[in-house]
Image 1 (spheres, rainbow, N blue to C red):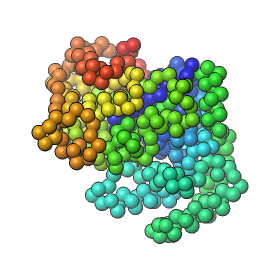
Image 2: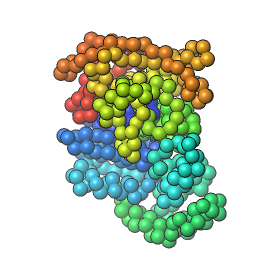
Image 3: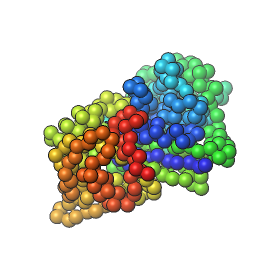
Image 4: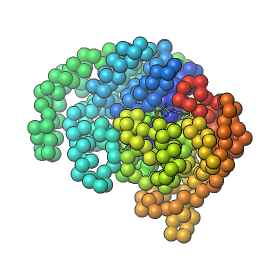
Length: 415
Ligand code: GDP
Ligand code: IMO
Ligand code: MG
């Protein structure tokens, strides 16, 4: 009984979808509570690849509840395409519920995302251009329309008023969309989505009071958190433990455990500091062998050694009870492997994750070096075990399982 949160500990793409797909066997449902169409969670089932953006990863499993809770920002067109794609492939298996409190994305959010990025010039953030930042900005600014507004008879009127307000605020939007067409389009979306819309707070509390076990599937990663991440090179939602509560409405009393997902090395898509980034052959090796190209955008991911200082920061703030370490197979065969254990900045040693981008961008990682290993079969060689033991001791958290491939069976349980 209770809820288990699964949180990415780095800059996203740690393999959260893959781990949730594994853990859902022993649960009754999966809840998405943050992010939106900027997320891309990959699940591989019998050589078929699924890339999920808004749907919880439990949707591929029969008889599981899949809840898109209030913290998720919804682009209804993307959501419907995703549902249709799974239906066509015969994999729309679970039950789906969508929160009536979730904020909506509109076409002008995407336009603003693109304009803002281009105005930032060389300081652009490298967003996914899905409109997520401008969409959440509307929510915080109390301008957003939510799913519940879509259900109301006055939706058209409300959207027209919002559009007038936006165009007056941002004349650059003038003439960029035909608001009457958008209103019609959203009415059509509503017809499609209506059967799935519920009060998910009420639903979650009912399921939990019936003794159901739920997984809370985080999107993005802690270092992209709006409050704790490498601001301003972050996403616009709360990717931390705080987002679990504000984005779903379950209470802290119902949360049993918090699991972290970490890659055995680091990656990052888009701009921002990355102290352990490798711009050399090893970095290219990790990118090519690890197929490090964005799930949502196809952009090449930046790669580097595991940053234990950053990952420990994530473990501390989120109260991580156990870690799933992914992509250990990608390190396999390297002559040596490094992990960052502190930073050096202007001759001083720093052992915490600094807020200042000036420091982060100019610090030199201090590394611990480990001998490489070669796996044969699914047994972890002694040197791989030593690497994991070192990480556990440094982070003060046990590694519960190790992923050695994208497929369901490529997993070593360490519990
Ligand atoms: P998410 O956003 O955290 O769900 O992660 P993504 O799906 O964006 O990126 C993770 C990528 O790594 C996907 O292509 C997965 O199929 C793949 N993957 C996950 N775990 C492993 C692993 O242990 N080994 C390998 N080789 N690939 C993995
Ligand atoms: P999942 O759930 C990796 C990054 C973008 C950009 C920054 C801001 O698949 O782990 P945004 O479009 O959110 O305004 O972009 O955040 N970003 C992600 N990086 N994985 C994600 O999600 C991401 N979602 C956003 O690349 O640097
Ligand atoms: Mg991803």
